[in-house]
Amino acid sequence: MNWRTHQRTTFLVASGLSTAGSFAGLTAKGWILMDGSGNALVLALHFAVLALPALLVSGPAGVATDKLGCEAVLIRSQWGLFAAGILGAVAIPLSNGDLQVVLLLLSTLLVGIASSYELTARNKYCALLVEDPQQLAPYLTSFSVVFNVGKLVGPPIGGWLLAWTGAGTALAIDAATYLIPIASVLWLLHPNRGLEQRSVAGASSGLRAAWRGSGPVLRHVLIYTALACLLGFFHPGLAPLMARDLLGPSPQSLGLFTSVLAAGSISGGLVLQRHSRWLSQRPGLLLGTCTLITATAQLAMAAFSGPETLGIGLAATFAVGAGTASLLAGVNLISQVGSSMAIRGRMAGLSQIAFLGGGGLSGLLAAAMSLTLGLQGTFAVLGAAGFVLGLQELISRRGLRLKLRSV
Image 1: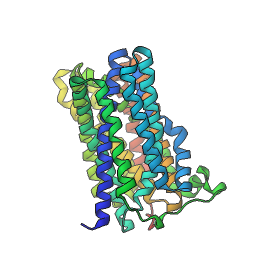
Image 2: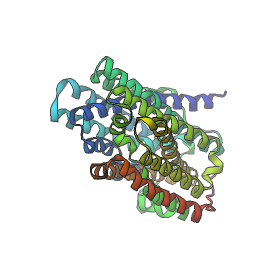
Image 3: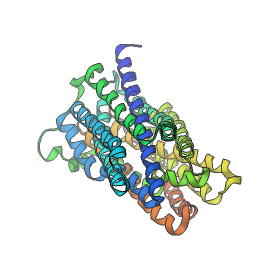
Image 4: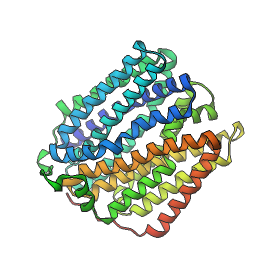
């Protein structure tokens, strides 16, 4: 293993540890909000304030990444994540009632804003750590696997810490883990900065110029992803409510439920990583299949409920994790390997607008539907719509091909 491989591994491990702490904190916040209100809309709002900032700041984040440089934006965004985590930690001992809810939501909102900048910059930064452009696709998809490993171990840690030591400790650990990637970027990593291409001031440095310059295939991928997420990516926002109905009212139940989601996400990410270059050249096949998997799982959840079908429910949860994770990692991968270095920051921003914006709106839509249709009815309606969308993509775009960029 050469020194540059060590660099990539170090960055992956640091990101994974931070992700695990982050999901421990998000699990703790979700449980506090559910325990205090029991309102599905509050839970959906918690996920929405994490995801919806992408609609507003991912574009500026992409522009800043291409203009200022990915390393500078990456470091600043990581400090922003740390500050947001500290706010969530101090909200527990210093407030209660409605004020505590507001502070926790504000903390998550700030995490969402900083995360938009961090993800945008990290995508472009990864290209500076690889020796060969052909290594970029599997390296980018490795982050999906590491991210979902963090999702797997983070929620149980959050649930256990809630039960053993209280919410304040869980949120304090969340804040502390953001220091790990900061230290790695500042002191341990040595990217090939000469590879980076920055945009120059003017109309060509804007988001619209990147959209026009990306080409028809990438534009279709972004539009399709937004629609697919709108119909099928509401589950993180409603996870506490779904876990309570499926497994019972305890923090450990929420940890198990989200862990099954994460296990499916890891499996989907591993498949995508193994075939990353081949699948990234076939966006219609990749994204259409992911949508069908998620939609079929939703329909299974709608058809089978109750303790006697617990196994089917958990299997469907696993499939939801695999389908949604592969969709998100897939659009991120396609937008990077199919675009030039000069616009990769803005393409990462556009990808976030598509999947996090669509996912945030989906959470609110699903929560509102669940108030009248119930969870099963919501699964049935959105699952059927997603099934039609995915099937149409496979039929009409299965032969779509993307040319990979050499730099």
